[in-house]
Image (cartoon, rainbow, N blue to C red; front, side, top):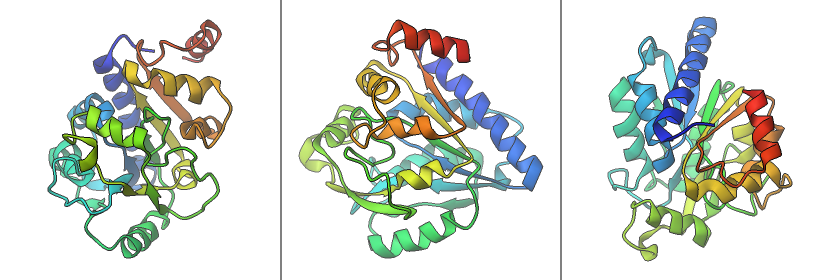
Length: 250
């Protein structure tokens, strides 16, 4: 647990950079999945500032995207990744989800590329409603499809307004493409950066509650190599016993 977002982001980025370097050293290529949203700002800022990563040997996959939103829209996650990761690092191998493409064809094409080999590391967040990618509750824990088309619930859409991506709820798309839960879990390693008080209830449900589609990110507890980075605000509702256990685990 960290005192603030910047420290959390810097430490998570150091961990991520080490994983990417190891994959490149071992196989000549690192395949990664990148999350977006306001919670990832500090993490991606620190990661892109890290030296010693051969970004030409990194292949990037997109976690989720709104259906119908142009790639140049301010709220587009394509735009987000271009500005905060691709342009800063010079990644040339990337598979973005264009929200204006026909969704079925898009997920078949990009999903095929995604399943071609194992992902070395997935960077994820946890939504205010506990979502993992755009898998809102109740999430589909069973599908083996790489990407699925989902309906966004109101809590998820309100989060997007609260983060400043849209002026009001009516502007937020109601459907999206999301990487499936099972596909995320198939990554060799998962790193979750989860700062901020507005995530505290979801963190509590996902860490202390039952593993359930109603708390989608709770499924991360079944993965053998997941690290969740919290700050004091996002961990504020966790019990003393849980905090002690987290401290003991490092």
